[in-house]
Image (cartoon, rainbow over all chains, first blue to last red; front, side):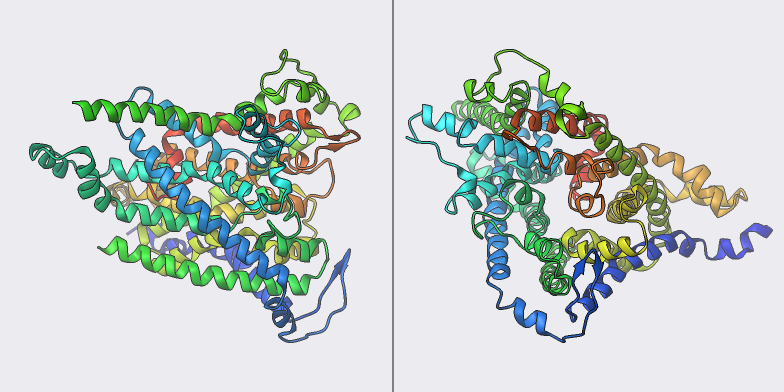
Length: 298
Length: 277
């Protein structure tokens, strides 16, 4: 054994390597959490500098659970995730099944289909503001020239349509994600059951129903859960397209916290909202991890 | 054979419809970027000719009142800087977790949860931390924040690349008398360079695209990043759509090129390791 090997660096090598990460995330993730938890019990405000503040107990929380803006935001966020994600799953499954076949230019198509999900979200929002525009936008132009609409509709500007317009943007942006995961799942399936089915003369539909779909269930669940956790994070798209309007029709939790903290400057109240959102996310992600673990063990 | 033909036809039709759906907004933005404010209302789809006016305007602060070149520089500095931070910190941690299982499953999951949380929950505390550490309005401050957000991604990706390097390599080098430091940096790390490169590019893409913290922490038009710079294209004549489209294309072009370069590893990164190829 050489001298170097018995040095304390050698002995604690593995801990030493992970130490910077612990400090870094300790400050940012867990320090942030401690700070925001503390602030949520205060009436701290921010106008250039932080104000003098008092500890006011659970007042912020009592206000939050009765706050119509926050409750609407929660509702909208879950409507968005609840509608967009299943649609993304269905489309993703369909597109993955198509790409999984022996077709020309498969690699190029897959690269093209990735583009929406790597496009800068603010730019995605701007692209769809062009598309939806009621004075010149492509969607209104096409729908009117096909005779589906008689007069232009400002899709992002009406309370009835705005949330649905944003849901379509989310579907555009994130269907590539579900497609990629499901496609990889399809390509990892064993071939033996298919050969047996072909020998038995099963139809394509039977093969899909009885072999592909059951074997694909774990992949589908993982795609769904990952995507759902991501969908409730939506911020940039709504910020740039509607900023929560008209009225509260597209208000989502990210925007509510942003507006409370940095427009109305109520850091204390915004902190309480943050803790509530974090609480919901932690419960959800624990359920998610539990389900994924269960699937993986099977 | 009939059913097979039918499936083929449906597949090709589906591919065409999907391509149109995915590519239309991008193509429409591309076409719009060549139209003047008046032409946007005259030519619903294709521009009359491919005039570069919008591009010249946005790059000229005197004409546009914007600082796109500064924005590009800020984005590049912050993306590259944050990538360096998270790659250095994350890669050594990933090696430790891959080889020694340091901290066990619990620590690994804890690290991953930092990426599952919505970024907005960090907005208030990080704003205050940056404000009172004097790092607000600095490239370093924003780079540190992005570094923290990308750390989980780097650790996850690099762990999966390290896992693919046989442990025999470590053992053989150690038997030859190399220190643990040399085992990592001389023998194992060079074998994951392609993965390291892909991970680095992914970090750059995420930082380049980020909006919320750039908005909160960079408050001068000279140090704002590109997404913040293009968030408000509102001028005397209302929204300047053509310029907005041009700026958007400038922002996404480098991303598309990067994505093309790391195509092979892109899927693993974008799906957070959900998929290996």
